[in-house]
Structure formats: C-alpha cells, structure tokens
Length: 107
Image (cartoon, rainbow, N blue to C red; front, side):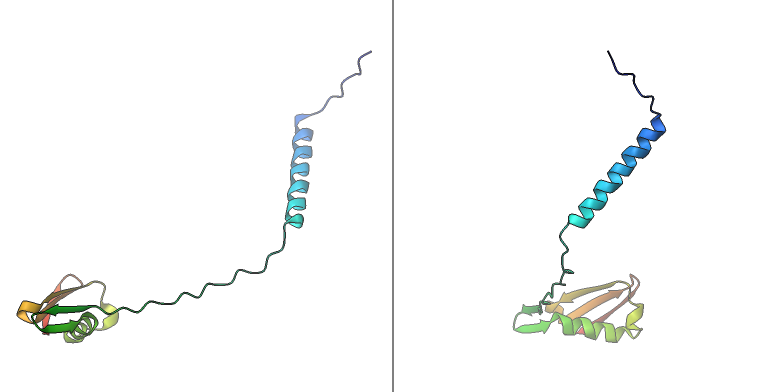
C-alpha cells in the first residue's frame, strides 16, 4: 500500500531551504580558520634621477623642473598640468603650465 503524500506549500519549502542555507553558511563561517590581520607591505620607494647630457652639458631634470615652476610665479598648488621641453642645443628649457602659461628657463 502506498503512503499518502503530505501536502506542502511552496512557501514552506522556500522558508525551510532558506533556513538550511543560513545554517550551513553560519557553520562554514565558524569553521573557517581565524587569520591574523594582514600586515601592510612596506614598499621601498625607488629614488631615481634623470639627467640630460648633450655636448658637455649635463642638467638634472628635477632641478630644471623646479626652476621652471619657480619662474612661473604662480602657486604650485594651482598647477594642474606641467609640460617641460628641454632643448640642450639652445641651453634652454621651455614649459607650459595648465595648457596656457608658457615660459623658459636657462640651463
């Protein structure tokens, strides 16, 4: 003789499945190994210097850049873009600041 089937509503099944999933998720979280907080990697900052050499002339690009920004005369915090063109044959560096302000400095 066959057993009579019990009538189950879809909502009851959804609730039961959700509870089971939640219980499993909680068990997994509890079983997961507790790890120590990750240590921040201390990266060493590389220091580099760029020089331009041409026919006996040697210039440090950082120094030329600083000289151009000082020659501009505005606040350094107001600089949004800075382009530097070094022409050793002219012994001059030309700059364009914020796309509109131009000038030059001797090397």
